[in-house]
Length: 462
Image (cartoon, rainbow, N blue to C red; front, top):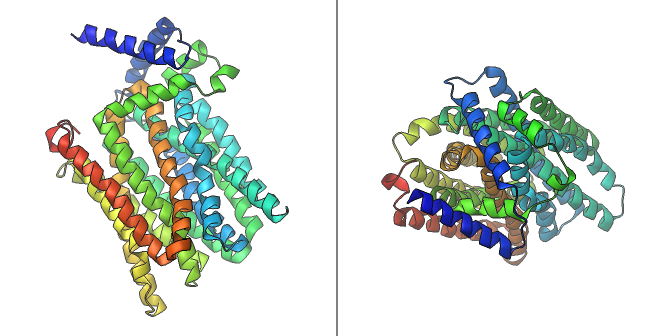
């Protein structure tokens, strides 16, 4: 029966690819390479302990790429507030960072599976270093041209940082086999690093101005590039270098790669993580855009806003270490849903916390709620990465991470402009409530999905 199922699957894939005009690859070569890659990965990863040098390099690449997302959203939001009063245009500028990532995340993940994760990470890390230095130059142009260039740079910088982070996630599956101990450690260190990033750059923005801020952003990305270069070449990538040298055709997106990635959605655990991730990132899209704008409107400084965002990441670091122990008590699927529920509620109630009380009371309330949000973020993220890593084959980790990032960026691209449009109709305060309710409706669908699927929740494996 298993052999018959495999034959049916191959025929189904061939028919679908034929209808879409996809050229069939050399399957015999691919099968031989896949077998060698799988054997090599098992040799590399079936050890109780991963060398600390390898861990440090992967964690470092993750820290500087992930924190740049938080840093850039803070700085670009502050820059957009200076450039325009239009909430929709502010949302468009902030959200544009994810437009290109939305289209190319799966392609980038497929390149990692095909050409080697480390090699692809190096290429994107170089671009991530260059991009920040170009933002201040855009301000020298006329208004319309300057806005257009900033949006273009946002897209390029966004996809570059995202691909380095996707690579770190893929390596957590390839090298660390999605084990919760290592994934929790990685996300904890990443969140700890994210505490310092927004705080430092918010302070720099208040005291040094635009040019020094963007120059330091370039230096920050350069440190990430250094970490990527320190990642050792695992044996499966050495096999790729000798068997599949880089060609120009490899750099062009393939429909077959997208089809292969989207087929992963048929796995119930993957479908669940994509739904939950979209909700979590949607709430983060609120924080990265109009949370900053709203707090600036009530005259809270950039340094304080940066501290609040960083404080959430500091608490998230502890939450990431708590995730694995809690998952032994509460099933990972339900734990992830509960944590994401709280990330939505804690950002949606932000306007309620600003009601004319003394400033120290307001800041204390904001810190407490954003800290609780950070704790839940810290718990949910390693669970998402671990569940996804365990649900798919080791040779498809790049596509899996790319698919998850595509969903992330879809939410990140849609939420800021959508919330900006809503804010222009009902005001910024009410837009928090409208977006919160909408995200919770989507999350309720995930709850129904787990209840109805026999392979999820307490009924299946984690």
